[in-house]
Length: 145
Image (tube, rainbow, N blue to C red; front, side, top):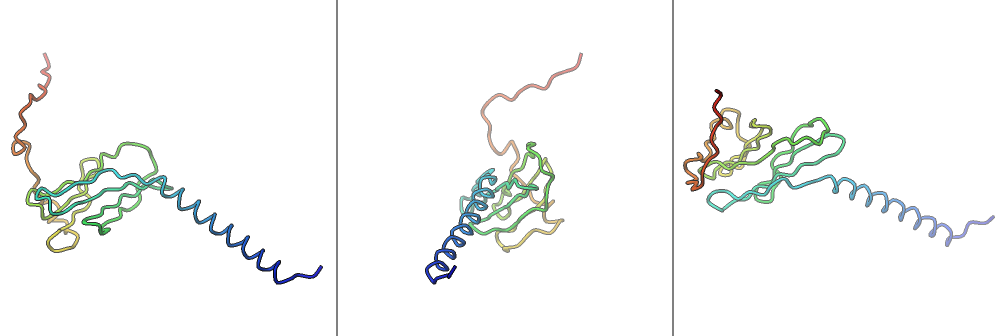
């Protein structure tokens, strides 16, 4: 059997089609497990931060500030548990902090354009509840009798 140029071109087109299909399906698979947890504007409304959870073999968290990726977390165990992950802005809008299950994992200094050091991360001040001027009634704590 003689192989013609037309046969080779057809075979190449089929292989390229298969490769594009595999890459496309892989991209859809990966994308379908990414979820935006929150978008949050700074108190002064000049900056924005976005937190994305990527659920794959492991779980990773991505923080984007003003459209630039500034942090990708190390792996978390693969689980569907609620991590309580959130991004919180400093009261002065100069930093944003990633918290997971109540622990500060990462902070980004907007002014300096860099990750916060550990001491800086733990020194970030958030707005207090009193500063939010809540006008509703708070739940009462139960008393043990």
